[in-house]
Amino acid sequence: MARKYLQKGDTITFTNAGSAIAAGAVVAMNDLVGIADTDIAASTGTGSVSIEGCFEVTKIAGTAWNLGDSVDWDASAVAFGKGITPAAGDVLLCAVCIEAAAAGATTAKIKLTPGAGTGQ
Image (tube, rainbow, N blue to C red; front, side):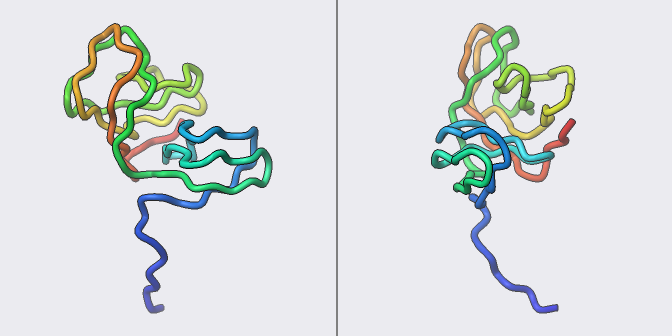
């Protein structure tokens, strides 16, 4: 079969099967994490989701992050964390820290790492 170019790959079209998603919200998709580029309506709404790039995100306070640390999506905390105890809906190793963040910080800067995550 011949290869067909589809798209650049930094964003994908996502069809929502659940509740409405606000622009800027994290979208966990099995082993993949993205950031909604637009509001996405509930149920069968579709919208653009960035699966590559650097973002400032909500961080779980309590652990310092260093440049290059792998970080995880914690679904129950609705935030990114480092070394979380995996639970349903979490995606491990889905991003890396791109700027050090203090233990008490509640936001941090990350780079999404598509293809590296492991969904729980």
